[in-house]
Image (cartoon, rainbow, N blue to C red):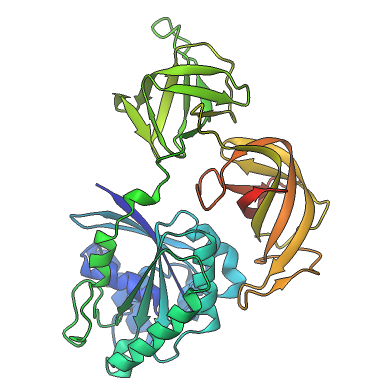
Length: 418
């Protein structure tokens, strides 16, 4: 069964957690004891209704403040598809949390309060979704019950957001009027909005086409681990384990190994469930070659005539995630890119990007917590990468502080430094 990963985002009190709670409740994926706990907590909080937001606001601080702080992951399934939800926080001080939660999403739902319209936070979330190259974006205009399910108000919000989205790189944009509190257009079409002819939110999530979003052209296999069993039965077994990061690999295919440049052909592709004839993203497999080549962790198996960029100087957008250290020119860090880790130095901070206004500050001297900027980095050894817009797996990296071994940044590669 196909799986869809989606992230929710929106301003404070736009109803992200309520919407997810409604999805979970209406698809009957809530256990009785969970529902009883939520009902009890709702009574204690003095609400007149069962507060479904409590199903996702799991931290005590979140429940007390009525906001989302950390990324909450929830899982549910329908007969058509499995789902992983990342409920991401809306506050600007938790930008790093949203980037983390949305980095692997196939789709993003941005909620907007129908009464308030498109706010600065709404634009920021849409921009981050665009920056992270999330292929599909849904604008859920929530709390339609509080504007009497007015079609004109929905169209005003839709047109305002569409004008802003025209500045961004969003391939697929869908607008759905909803009321998460009452369940209008969440799982079933709403009788209160007969003027809306589109699908319910769940129907859209079940039907949106994601198979073609993955890069099935550029074969990329970063080697994570070399398997050499120490047993008589498998004394000549030499396999290379990892996760396919792009393209399709088949037995018999001619491949080239980077960084050595040596070539061979694929002898077999093994999985936990047995051998297969082909592998594609995001399958975890072990590849065996017909020739003995010196291959180790951090190398990459590719096609001879379709190879990634190989460079030490990269141009990237970086979201900074550390309160303790900042990113400055000449700062030294460790970069983890696919399965390769290497020391690196920041050569230049090109600009700091104001994610609310999209203004570029060319005079910025550092990136601090939750800030995003364009930087030039030089790695100690060459990286094998594609541009992030072409392959999110081989086009991204994390920045690690050498002293503490803590992740301090996340990067999206734009290309090589010219």
